[in-house]
Every structure is written in structure tokens, then in C-alpha cells.
Length: 416
Image (cartoon, rainbow, N blue to C red; front, side, top):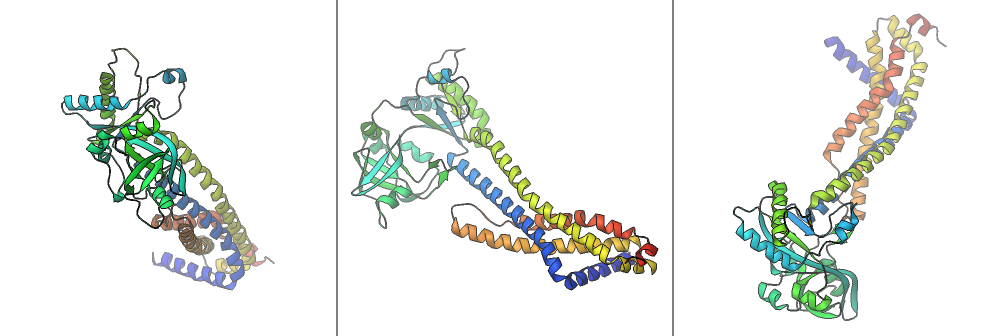
């Protein structure tokens, strides 16, 4: 054991002496590993950020909310079956709430109707287009997955009376009322006046497709006055226990069939959706992007490993006489093997640590330039990068080191 420790210590001393003696060559050799580590760790950080952003987007949908709609979320093959379905109506939500109340130990807590349409919001000379306007009930506050920057949601009295009040998203407030409060101001949605009674805190967008900060929410009766009554809707149903979501979906199917008076044997004329449907579709895409990205960036690390192997072979050739002398004096094959293997691993470790440092500063720069992108430097990347550096060093240095350890001392001493 003592001999092995001595051999390791001596191998490290010789390895670092050779690195110092050939600084430029060692630096250029490590450059390939540095580039490879930066590429792989940056890609890993980006994939982690994409995954976090994806999960944050799904959380906006609510993991305890079921969505009743005319169409399923996903690919539709029998299109004609769905297009002929009757639209979901706000009245269906009222019937569902009656069914929930009559069901002992129901897993379903509340059904809230939602009717939506895109429009333009105006205030004086300011306007913002692409505003998604929703009509709903006062119960929406019980399923709302957002905080208020200021103000409040409309109450039951305002909802039943259809008063022209609304809650607007963060971006709308910033665009129409820059630098001041929007509470109590009158804006026009589809040409109809509405008094702002609340502003939502900044939420972000859902997968870059829907901006939650560019929405307006009003009582459903007020929505009908502004946009008409001939519009389908969806129903959002809050589940009491999200760990029993599958059972809750089964119960909701029965409740919806009962609310619509569907006969046994009839095909469901509605769809029950949740965030799991979107996750199931996007997970393979996300995994494909991750695998492709890591494969492409891994090629740069592979090129760096080839460079280290090449330089280690050169080093063995240059020091053939030294190897012959050491073996003639009694050095074991293991000692020679460790010497060159540790030299290759040391270069990889130095390159890995430099690459990690560059990645850290690059991540800080990306976070400063794109603050909305959820990117962060993970401590797990440090351990992964160190392990990868050691593995690359062993893999690239083993063949030259093995060849050096197998040299015949007589032949090595005669090498010119």
C-alpha cells in the first residue's frame, strides 16, 4: 500500500513537471477539453432551464384543475365526431355544481365557466392588441393561480348584475397606464367601456404561446353584452385532492353526462383535459431536443479527447529513452502506466475546471441579458463535469500509457 501511494505521488509530481515544462502544448491540448466542457455544460444548463420553464408553464394550468371542453388537447383523428358535438355552455357549469353538491364525498369542488375571445384594449391614445378577454363568474377567484398586483376580482353582485368591470394583466396595465395605477380607470374592450378594478401580478407566458400578462377578465354577463352570446366556452373544475386526479376525472365524466342528460351507451359529447395531456405530447419532443443537443456538443468533447490521446502518444515517443532507463532501474509497468495516465487526467481536470469557470460567467451573462429565461448554474454540473473530465482523461490516455508500460527496456534505450 505504501509503495502504491509513493507511486501515485511520484506520478503526480512527474505529470505536473511535464505540464510546466510544456506550458503552450499543454494549454493547447487542454483547450479542446475546455471547449468541450463549456459546450456540454452550457447545453446541460440550457436543457435544465427549458425543463424548468416547461414545468412552470404547466403549473400555470394548475395541477388540481380539470378542463371540460368540446375538443381534446392533442391530436384529433376522428375530426367529424368532435365537430358535431354541442358547445360547452356556462349553464353546464351551474348544473355540474348541483351534481357535485348532491354527490356524497365528491372529489370535485367547484365548476367555473370560462368564455374567451381576442380583442383590442384602448385607453385614450394608448392601445394594445391581441388581448385575450375572458368572461367568468365570481368563483373564478377560487381557482385563480395568480396574485394581484393591486385591486381585486369582481364579487357576486357585480357578476350577476353584469357590471362593466374588469381585471387586467400586467402587460396591459404597463402599456395603457405607464408609471401609474390603472385602478378606477375606464378602458375599452371591443369598443365597450369597462372600469378596471384589479391588476394581476406578472405571470409570464405558457410555452411562449399564450401570454398570461395580456389578458382581461370580466363578469360573464358583461362579456355577453360586449361580444354576444353565441360563443362556446370551457369549464374549469377544481379537484379537492390532486393526488386522486384519475378518480376525479372519472367522476367528472359521470357528472358531465348527468348534467347533459346523456343516455347509457351514448358516446361522450365533451372532453376532459388536464396538464398531463400537454406533458405527454411535449415530453418526447423535449427529450429529443436534449439528446440531440448533448450528442452534438458531446462531439466537441470527443475531439478534445482525441487531441489529448495524440499528445500523449507524442509524449511517449519523446520520452522513450526515459521510460527505458526507468524500467532498467526497476520501475514496474504499473508505475509507467500511472505516470502517463495521471498526466492525461491532470490536463483534462485543468481543462474541465477552466471550462466550468467560463460556463459560470456565461450563465451569469445569459441570465442578465435574458432575465425571463429560467437558467441557473447548478452545483450538480460541477460534479458531472469533474467526473466527465476524469473519464475523458482515462479514456484518451489509457492506450498511450498502456503502450508505454509495455515497452521493452532494451529497445527503449536504443531508441533515437
